[in-house]
Image (cartoon, rainbow, N blue to C red; front, top):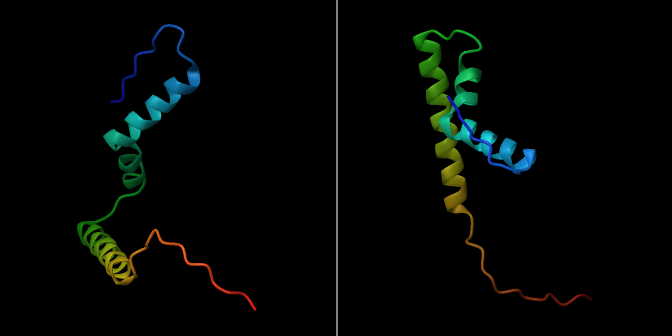
Length: 78
């Protein structure tokens, strides 16, 4: 459970920002989203495999792309 202590004269925006970071760090939002509906073991396994395939595909795509350089080359315009 996310617990935040409010310091004296601390603006509410910073308190909410700290609370939101804590909730994300503890994984509360993802737990709530996962438990919205029941998944059988086979469905959960299928979803997990699908997510792993997507992340592997994303990694392959990123590794194939050319590395960005910090050198800027001006193109001649006609």
